[in-house]
Length: 407
Image (cartoon, rainbow, N blue to C red; front, side):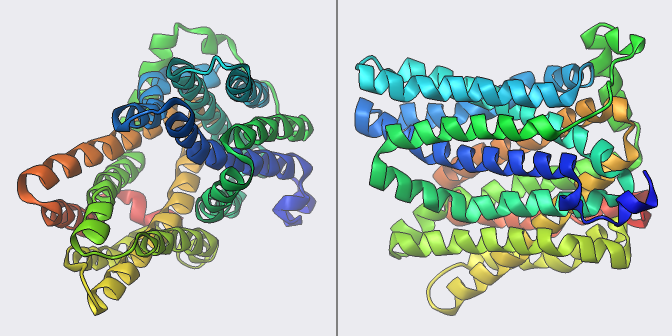
């Protein structure tokens, strides 16, 4: 990459700008369907708690089932056509929902199928996007690029679902889902401006099982990636333990109104946004690995405040601690994703990303199951204490790894 290109602001680079806008539009659409699909199931089809829970879980289950094959497949092909195809797939799946509702043949089975197709499309889109970024901006600018991408994603978490709720209230769930489908078509149109070199080589045509094994061996053979994986797994296990049962604790047991729960969770969204926005500065001043290590060491003890969540000052203290912990999450999401992309060869990016995603998503699912079981057996605060303890120790994997010395 020439010096002239390096000096340009990232959003002045047309391929990256188009990729960024396409991803932002796609993420906003995902927030709409996240809110509208369960609401439509309840209001139009009379779905119960079990059916709504299954509908929400199918996206995660899709990642667990398809994660490794998806990464190997993305490494065999060009990434931009994959992203365009998955945008079109998600648009078609979601368009079937308002058509079915207006035609009178909408069913829960159809919504389940839509959830699976959208989950598979999102998995492939995200893996392809993360694998494409290094080739568009150069590995020396990955932290700045990921800061933009992760910060936008955090912003969507804060504002996207609120906007989706207003849209569903004003226009109805079927219309909201129709607009979601159109957002994916818009995303596909923006991707036309993204250009990439061909990635296929004869060795990429090996049997897919052999390619999956090569990706897994690469990940677990790299001590830097292993440390990032262990740290991320600990954090992803701890966060559900600290958050899944909050509605029971805050609303039912402490008697706060629902808006207090929303404000508490919104503090987490703001923390993620702040951390991702500051990541480029921290990485430039301290180095990527050192910044991630020091931020984890400094913020992890804040988790020990969470189990004391209660009335008066303890509510404020817990919300502040939640902000601090999610700040670290936003920071790490940028720094560690950038580091992973930097140390991974181009032809292994898809497999590395998909394997990481599979393991990290599994930790989230396990954390949710543990939270529910512990809440039933020993009470809500037992889950909070376990999650806080794991989070407080989540800096330890860095201590024995070269990751904390990475530039």
